[in-house]
View (tube, rainbow, N blue to C red):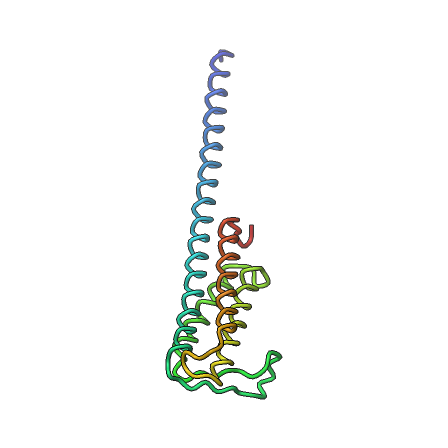
Length: 168
């Protein structure tokens, strides 16, 4: 066999192998980008849903003529639990949205911490509402929950900007 022909065959095979490796690497990078974008989209949707459901519940409790009772003896370190009349559907939506936030991120991370702070601030609104009528909750309590909402938005934006993906 001619040495030139052997070298041509080896060169062709090497070119095909190198081309295959480059295409495979390109496909892997593209799949990673698509996966990262899908996770970012899911996180953004979860963050928006959580914030929107908490805000709907806040608006409901501040404006509707509903009874809010404080239940003692729950063993809760933060004090009594506010029980809000006709709020089951709101709470279900909040819990579902919070579960999505939790599932898509670090359970001990900054986004979950901001979410917990927002729920704590909302609890302060509900607790105050137990002794105040619709539209009569003190402004400083409302300002506290609004500040917690802004903090959640800021932390969520930073998380989305970092493109942090669980398991990376």
